[in-house]
Amino acid sequence: MKKIFNYVKGSFHELKVLLRSAPSLLVGLFFVSVVGMNLLANKSINTGVDWLALDAGILLSWMIFMCMDIITKRYGPKAANMISIMGLLVNLLMALIFFLASIIPGVWSASYVEGSENIINNAFDGTFAGTWFIILGSSIAFIVSAFINNFLNYLIGKSIKKNPNGFLAFALRSYVSTFIGQFIDNFLFALIVSLHFFGWSILQCVTCALTGAVLELLFEIIFSPLGYKICRSLEKDNQEDAYLKLIAAKKEELTHESAN
Picture 1: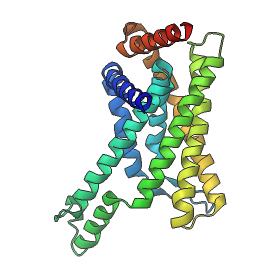
Picture 2: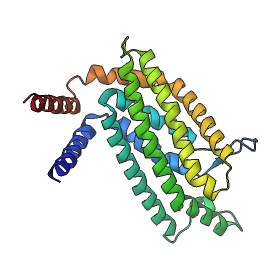
Picture 3: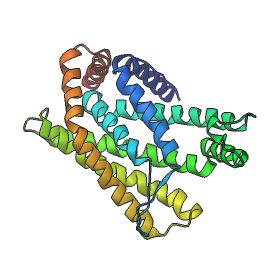
Picture 4: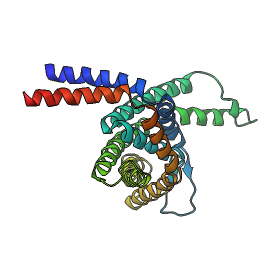
Protein backbone atom coordinates (compact mmCIF):
# COMPACT_ATOMS: atom_id res chain seq x y z
CA MET A 1 0.00 0.00 0.00
CA LYS A 2 2.87 2.33 0.82
CA LYS A 3 4.43 1.69 -2.60
CA ILE A 4 1.16 2.59 -4.32
CA PHE A 5 0.88 5.78 -2.27
CA ASN A 6 4.47 6.74 -3.07
CA TYR A 7 3.90 6.01 -6.78
CA VAL A 8 0.76 8.19 -6.88
CA LYS A 9 2.52 10.94 -4.93
CA GLY A 10 5.51 10.76 -7.26
CA SER A 11 3.24 10.86 -10.34
CA PHE A 12 1.49 13.99 -9.04
CA HIS A 13 4.88 15.62 -8.53
CA GLU A 14 5.92 14.63 -12.05
CA LEU A 15 2.71 16.11 -13.43
CA LYS A 16 3.31 19.41 -11.63
CA VAL A 17 6.84 19.63 -13.01
CA LEU A 18 5.63 18.60 -16.48
CA LEU A 19 2.96 21.31 -16.57
CA ARG A 20 5.61 23.87 -15.64
CA SER A 21 8.05 22.54 -18.25
CA ALA A 22 5.86 21.84 -21.29
CA PRO A 23 5.01 24.85 -23.48
CA SER A 24 1.79 26.35 -22.12
CA LEU A 25 0.53 27.17 -25.61
CA LEU A 26 0.90 23.54 -26.70
CA VAL A 27 -0.86 22.17 -23.61
CA GLY A 28 -3.56 24.85 -23.83
CA LEU A 29 -4.15 24.08 -27.50
CA PHE A 30 -4.46 20.40 -26.62
CA PHE A 31 -7.10 21.07 -23.94
CA VAL A 32 -9.08 23.45 -26.17
CA SER A 33 -9.01 20.91 -29.02
CA VAL A 34 -10.30 18.11 -26.78
CA VAL A 35 -13.24 20.24 -25.60
CA GLY A 36 -13.92 21.65 -29.06
CA MET A 37 -13.78 18.23 -30.71
CA ASN A 38 -16.51 16.89 -28.45
CA LEU A 39 -18.73 19.89 -29.20
CA LEU A 40 -18.18 19.60 -32.95
CA ALA A 41 -18.93 15.88 -32.79
CA ASN A 42 -22.59 16.85 -32.31
CA LYS A 43 -22.75 17.84 -35.97
CA SER A 44 -22.81 15.09 -38.58
CA ILE A 45 -21.36 15.71 -42.03
CA ASN A 46 -23.59 15.03 -45.00
CA THR A 47 -21.33 13.02 -47.29
CA GLY A 48 -24.07 12.02 -49.72
CA VAL A 49 -23.11 8.36 -49.30
CA ASP A 50 -25.27 6.03 -47.20
CA TRP A 51 -22.47 3.87 -45.85
CA LEU A 52 -20.17 6.78 -45.00
CA ALA A 53 -20.81 8.60 -41.71
CA LEU A 54 -18.60 11.42 -40.39
CA ASP A 55 -18.91 14.16 -37.82
CA ALA A 56 -17.35 17.62 -37.60
CA GLY A 57 -15.07 16.49 -34.76
CA ILE A 58 -12.50 15.44 -37.37
CA LEU A 59 -11.68 19.14 -37.85
CA LEU A 60 -9.91 19.16 -34.46
CA SER A 61 -9.07 15.55 -33.62
CA TRP A 62 -5.94 15.58 -35.79
CA MET A 63 -4.63 18.53 -33.75
CA ILE A 64 -5.04 16.53 -30.54
CA PHE A 65 -2.92 13.70 -31.91
CA MET A 66 -0.27 16.07 -33.26
CA CYS A 67 0.05 17.65 -29.81
CA MET A 68 0.38 14.20 -28.23
CA ASP A 69 3.02 13.23 -30.79
CA ILE A 70 5.06 16.34 -29.98
CA ILE A 71 4.81 15.73 -26.23
CA THR A 72 5.71 12.05 -26.66
CA LYS A 73 8.72 12.90 -28.80
CA ARG A 74 9.99 15.48 -26.32
CA TYR A 75 8.97 14.07 -22.93
CA GLY A 76 8.06 10.41 -23.48
CA PRO A 77 4.81 8.39 -23.44
CA LYS A 78 4.19 8.71 -19.69
CA ALA A 79 4.17 12.48 -19.95
CA ALA A 80 1.82 12.35 -22.94
CA ASN A 81 -0.46 9.97 -21.04
CA MET A 82 -0.58 12.30 -18.04
CA ILE A 83 -1.46 15.25 -20.28
CA SER A 84 -4.13 13.08 -21.95
CA ILE A 85 -5.69 12.26 -18.58
CA MET A 86 -5.65 15.96 -17.72
CA GLY A 87 -7.34 16.67 -21.05
CA LEU A 88 -10.04 14.12 -20.23
CA LEU A 89 -10.65 15.71 -16.82
CA VAL A 90 -10.79 19.21 -18.35
CA ASN A 91 -13.31 17.97 -20.91
CA LEU A 92 -15.49 16.40 -18.20
CA LEU A 93 -15.33 19.63 -16.21
CA MET A 94 -16.37 21.65 -19.25
CA ALA A 95 -19.16 19.16 -19.99
CA LEU A 96 -20.47 19.79 -16.46
CA ILE A 97 -20.27 23.58 -16.95
CA PHE A 98 -22.04 23.31 -20.32
CA PHE A 99 -24.75 21.20 -18.70
CA LEU A 100 -25.26 23.78 -15.95
CA ALA A 101 -25.42 26.53 -18.58
CA SER A 102 -28.10 24.58 -20.45
CA ILE A 103 -30.41 24.29 -17.43
CA ILE A 104 -30.01 27.90 -16.29
CA PRO A 105 -33.13 29.85 -17.33
CA GLY A 106 -32.36 32.16 -20.22
CA VAL A 107 -32.28 32.55 -23.98
CA TRP A 108 -29.43 31.99 -26.44
CA SER A 109 -28.80 34.99 -28.68
CA ALA A 110 -29.10 32.91 -31.86
CA SER A 111 -32.63 31.82 -30.93
CA TYR A 112 -34.22 35.20 -31.66
CA VAL A 113 -36.06 34.05 -34.77
CA GLU A 114 -39.72 35.01 -34.79
CA GLY A 115 -41.92 31.99 -34.19
CA SER A 116 -39.03 29.60 -33.51
CA GLU A 117 -37.47 30.99 -30.34
CA ASN A 118 -38.32 28.04 -28.08
CA ILE A 119 -37.38 25.38 -30.63
CA ILE A 120 -33.98 26.93 -31.36
CA ASN A 121 -33.27 27.71 -27.71
CA ASN A 122 -34.07 24.13 -26.67
CA ALA A 123 -31.86 22.84 -29.49
CA PHE A 124 -28.92 24.90 -28.25
CA ASP A 125 -29.52 23.72 -24.69
CA GLY A 126 -29.60 20.11 -25.88
CA THR A 127 -26.39 20.51 -27.89
CA PHE A 128 -24.39 22.01 -25.04
CA ALA A 129 -25.89 19.77 -22.36
CA GLY A 130 -24.84 16.65 -24.21
CA THR A 131 -26.00 13.18 -23.28
CA TRP A 132 -24.45 10.71 -20.89
CA PHE A 133 -23.76 8.03 -23.51
CA ILE A 134 -21.95 10.45 -25.85
CA ILE A 135 -19.77 11.77 -23.02
CA LEU A 136 -19.08 8.22 -21.83
CA GLY A 137 -18.30 6.94 -25.31
CA SER A 138 -16.06 9.85 -26.24
CA SER A 139 -14.19 9.65 -22.93
CA ILE A 140 -13.45 5.92 -23.25
CA ALA A 141 -12.53 6.18 -26.92
CA PHE A 142 -10.27 9.18 -26.34
CA ILE A 143 -8.26 7.84 -23.41
CA VAL A 144 -7.77 4.36 -24.93
CA SER A 145 -6.69 5.74 -28.30
CA ALA A 146 -4.46 8.34 -26.64
CA PHE A 147 -2.55 5.72 -24.64
CA ILE A 148 -2.16 3.50 -27.70
CA ASN A 149 -1.01 6.42 -29.85
CA ASN A 150 1.53 7.60 -27.28
CA PHE A 151 3.11 4.20 -26.64
CA LEU A 152 3.11 3.27 -30.33
CA ASN A 153 4.70 6.58 -31.24
CA TYR A 154 7.40 6.02 -28.63
CA LEU A 155 8.10 2.40 -29.66
CA ILE A 156 8.40 3.33 -33.33
CA GLY A 157 10.77 6.13 -32.40
CA LYS A 158 12.92 3.77 -30.32
CA SER A 159 13.16 1.32 -33.22
CA ILE A 160 14.55 3.95 -35.61
CA LYS A 161 18.33 3.91 -35.40
CA LYS A 162 19.27 6.03 -38.40
CA ASN A 163 18.82 9.75 -37.72
CA PRO A 164 16.09 9.28 -35.06
CA ASN A 165 15.72 13.05 -34.65
CA GLY A 166 15.26 13.77 -38.34
CA PHE A 167 12.03 14.73 -40.05
CA LEU A 168 11.52 11.34 -41.70
CA ALA A 169 11.72 9.61 -38.32
CA PHE A 170 9.28 12.11 -36.81
CA ALA A 171 6.91 11.68 -39.76
CA LEU A 172 7.00 7.87 -39.64
CA ARG A 173 6.27 7.62 -35.92
CA SER A 174 3.57 10.30 -36.16
CA TYR A 175 1.81 8.98 -39.26
CA VAL A 176 1.62 5.36 -38.13
CA SER A 177 0.60 6.10 -34.55
CA THR A 178 -1.91 8.75 -35.63
CA PHE A 179 -3.62 6.52 -38.18
CA ILE A 180 -3.94 3.59 -35.79
CA GLY A 181 -4.87 5.81 -32.84
CA GLN A 182 -7.49 7.70 -34.83
CA PHE A 183 -9.00 4.49 -36.18
CA ILE A 184 -9.31 3.09 -32.66
CA ASP A 185 -10.77 6.36 -31.37
CA ASN A 186 -13.40 6.53 -34.13
CA PHE A 187 -14.21 2.83 -34.01
CA LEU A 188 -14.63 2.65 -30.23
CA PHE A 189 -16.88 5.71 -30.23
CA ALA A 190 -18.95 4.28 -33.08
CA LEU A 191 -19.31 0.93 -31.30
CA ILE A 192 -20.21 2.45 -27.93
CA VAL A 193 -22.50 5.24 -29.14
CA SER A 194 -23.50 5.11 -32.81
CA LEU A 195 -24.14 1.37 -33.05
CA HIS A 196 -26.37 1.16 -29.98
CA PHE A 197 -28.02 4.59 -29.83
CA PHE A 198 -28.07 5.90 -33.41
CA GLY A 199 -28.76 2.64 -35.22
CA TRP A 200 -25.56 2.50 -37.24
CA SER A 201 -24.52 -0.75 -38.87
CA ILE A 202 -21.15 -2.41 -38.26
CA LEU A 203 -20.21 -1.44 -41.81
CA GLN A 204 -20.91 2.21 -41.04
CA CYS A 205 -18.84 1.97 -37.84
CA VAL A 206 -15.87 0.51 -39.72
CA THR A 207 -16.09 2.89 -42.69
CA CYS A 208 -16.52 5.90 -40.40
CA ALA A 209 -13.48 4.86 -38.37
CA LEU A 210 -11.37 4.13 -41.44
CA THR A 211 -12.37 7.19 -43.45
CA GLY A 212 -12.02 9.46 -40.44
CA ALA A 213 -8.56 8.05 -39.74
CA VAL A 214 -7.50 8.66 -43.37
CA LEU A 215 -8.79 12.25 -43.36
CA GLU A 216 -7.19 13.01 -40.00
CA LEU A 217 -3.93 11.46 -41.24
CA LEU A 218 -4.02 13.85 -44.20
CA PHE A 219 -4.28 16.77 -41.77
CA GLU A 220 -1.33 15.32 -39.85
CA ILE A 221 0.72 15.01 -43.05
CA ILE A 222 -0.01 18.62 -43.99
CA PHE A 223 0.91 20.00 -40.58
CA SER A 224 3.69 17.55 -39.62
CA PRO A 225 6.45 19.97 -40.75
CA LEU A 226 5.08 22.43 -38.18
CA GLY A 227 5.00 19.72 -35.51
CA TYR A 228 8.60 18.76 -36.31
CA LYS A 229 9.70 22.40 -36.18
CA ILE A 230 8.12 22.76 -32.73
CA CYS A 231 9.95 19.63 -31.53
CA ARG A 232 13.29 20.89 -32.81
CA SER A 233 12.66 24.27 -31.21
CA LEU A 234 11.95 22.63 -27.85
CA GLU A 235 15.11 20.55 -28.07
CA LYS A 236 17.24 23.62 -28.85
CA ASP A 237 15.66 26.05 -26.39
CA ASN A 238 15.11 23.81 -23.39
CA GLN A 239 18.21 21.69 -22.95
CA GLU A 240 17.94 22.01 -19.16
CA ASP A 241 14.25 21.11 -19.03
CA ALA A 242 13.09 20.56 -15.42
CA TYR A 243 10.89 17.57 -16.27
CA LEU A 244 13.60 15.79 -18.23
CA LYS A 245 16.07 16.42 -15.41
CA LEU A 246 13.57 14.93 -12.93
CA ILE A 247 13.07 11.80 -15.06
CA ALA A 248 16.83 11.42 -15.54
CA ALA A 249 17.36 11.69 -11.76
CA LYS A 250 14.70 9.02 -11.13
CA LYS A 251 16.30 6.66 -13.65
CA GLU A 252 19.68 7.17 -12.04
CA GLU A 253 18.17 6.46 -8.62
CA LEU A 254 16.54 3.24 -9.86
CA THR A 255 19.80 2.15 -11.49
CA HIS A 256 21.66 2.81 -8.26
CA GLU A 257 19.09 0.81 -6.22
CA SER A 258 19.27 -2.09 -8.67
CA ALA A 259 23.05 -2.13 -8.46
CA ASN A 260 22.87 -2.40 -4.67
